[in-house]
Amino acid sequence: MNIIMLGAQGTGKGTVAGLISEQTGMPQISTGDIFRENISKKTELGIEADKYISKGYLVPDEITIPIVKDRLTWEDAQKGVILDGFPRTIEQAEALDKMLSEKGEKIDLVINLTTPKEEIIDRMLTRRVCTNQECKAIYNIKLHPPKKEGICDKCGSQLKQRKDDSDPDAIERRLEEYEEKTSPLVEYYRQKGVLKTETVSTSINRMGQDVAKEIIEEIKSK
Ligand code: ADP
Ligand code: ZN
Image (cartoon, rainbow, N blue to C red; front, side):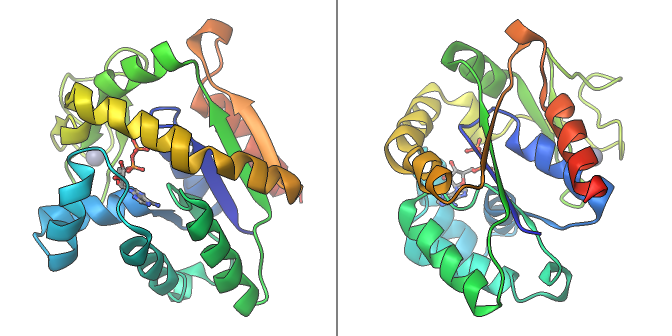
């Protein structure tokens, strides 16, 4: 089974993907995490990707698509994956369809998370991530704070704010990039009959954890 997490920044894609991965053993493939890991190790890829990421632009398809193509050949990816943050353009979606069809696979489910825009900006500003690259747990100082301020519940490492989450210009640009380049994917997957849209909002008291729980039950019952 192959799952895509779709939705704007700060809607909880990473949180939902992480929970599904934990409960089902399917690997979570996050292009944002792959880029950040490379940025922190100062690899050639990291240095190139950071030019775009720090300003809030999407990393070009020529860089992003081959990374996912390679990741899908890994042994752990042969029984299905949860893609978190990929695809983000129609070109990436078409390339992904091709990669999967070559393996005799397809996308089975696209979970599209939506959240009101005011809430999204607030969630990005209050998001904190674990600095331990093996852990990468995600917190929110308002909605889902760690037990001890600034410290990861899971591994005890320090939490930090992502650079692109603390810069208002980068936040604005990321939301524009989403609207322009990524939101057309909603229609793309609706037409394929695999789209499941879920609203995540404090106003209806529905969080990513609730969505994840339902989806995990659905997967396990199959
Ligand atoms: P967010 O959902 O908050 O944007 P991510 O960790 O998914 O966080 O992505 C961080 C940044 O990495 C994005 O703003 C973008 O610059 C880059 N990125 C991640 N995935 C992709 C992708 N599939 N295509 C292009 N750029 C990407
Ligand atoms: Zn941690």
